[in-house]
Image 1 (spheres, helix red, strand yellow):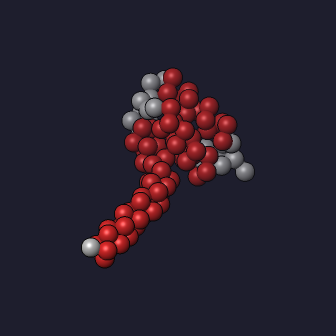
Image 2: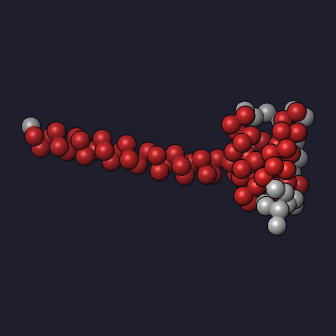
Length: 91
């Protein structure tokens, strides 16, 4: 019985410690996925990829696109603008 309890505890520990890592990796790629999905609905993604902007400028651009009808939530917009700022920074 003690062995079953210990094994069950180890399984629970493994899964609960692995989940935050998977979530962090998923969030890192979500910005790119959302960018490709949302932005390509209205224009080619090469349009954004050709720009270099500061984080504030990307945030402003993403907000403007939402005002123009792009469909995404506030949190998705943050992921998109963070991705763009990291991937296409102003130098």
